[in-house]
Length: 242
Image (cartoon, rainbow, N blue to C red; front, top):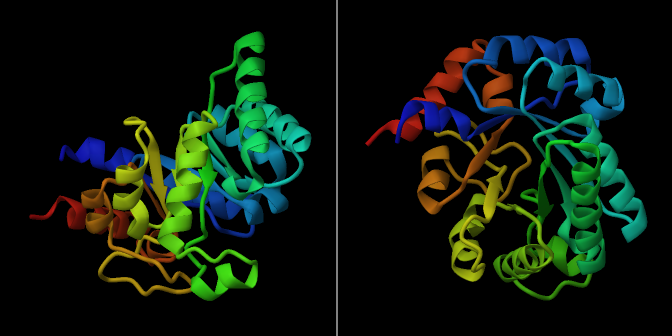
């Protein structure tokens, strides 16, 4: 795989407490990776203004907000996210078909009406921190991989661009979803030199790419390193190695 193409697959998670800390990571890794993820912690701390600021800098932003609410609320929120100019954002697939369809439809209609770039909209399946007991607690009797494929099919049927899923379910999603350009974004990525932390269903970057993941979300193994740039380059070398 071409190194430039490999870099584009890496999304660095800005799971930090302040905008200044996030800016420092972006400044250090901006030329090394394809995008940056702004999640609930940073969005709550720094607000939508920081998202706009980052987009204006020419940085691709994956806004990891995992919307899950009544269809009307999620649809209106999806429109506002599009107005921020992000590259990609997500909603919880467990919110159901009406919520997914309205979020995708109303967001795209607003983009067409207002001349906005259309963000990628992806559905969160089952969090990588979840195990079988987590699903049983909330009344889901399916095995994790079966439920992930079920939610991926629903997401595709409702017109979304892809899903967030553990790398361990990528191959099953590829087999279970007919849409060929369906995106799979995988957190739970742990290079061979890193620990699993609070993630359960993990995989190395190289394994995830081989399984068919389109984008890899990498947080602490990169952002927590003493030399972040060296850590990212080590991850790229791991992917590129024979």
